[in-house]
Length: 266
View (cartoon, rainbow, N blue to C red):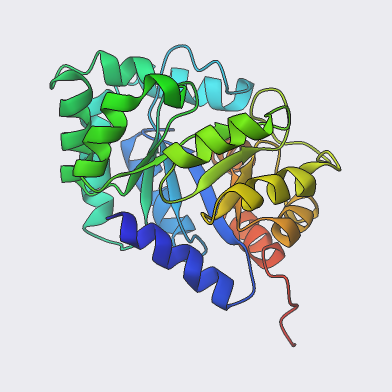
């Protein structure tokens, strides 16, 4: 499974572009709407993050918080998210990563950590993105994920020390997630100028691809990230467009185009 992640980043690198990694909240605006949105994004996406709705998403800004609240209010639970992943895996080979806080894993009715990892892998996902779980406290989950061939992706911030970067990258498989800002998710008009420096520090510590998220909202913010990183993660801008009934395909095409480092001859 994690081999799909490696292949996706390798294919993007071979084409001299950053991988485009869209995020959507599972079950938002409803099950059918979510699945159709993923189908819309798939032609443009190299990997897809599936957000597990959670009632207290501390790392997320208002757009994704509201989408989680709406999904939960609509009855979406972990078992439903796994069903949606099964549906998607039957349709596509694009890598699917579950982004989840630790509480739903710990409280998973199917058997806690071990059951969650087992069922996520069985549904066809390729990895887990874990925004609030320190690698130092993730030993048993990492062990279970390795056994199930699930990648584990942890987050690094601009404030991360070299020692922290070494510890986090050692725990990662698939890729490393670099947070562009010290704050919550959300579309921004510009990103900090020190993002390339953070990416270089991570690349110096690990051979894994580095994807940058938090704040990318369109071509203007995706382009400088793509110039420095191996992947560009976009969440809030897509979720907002979906919720407002906007043109999701047009936004995805714009961002995917900005991920190309060499302009396409026209």
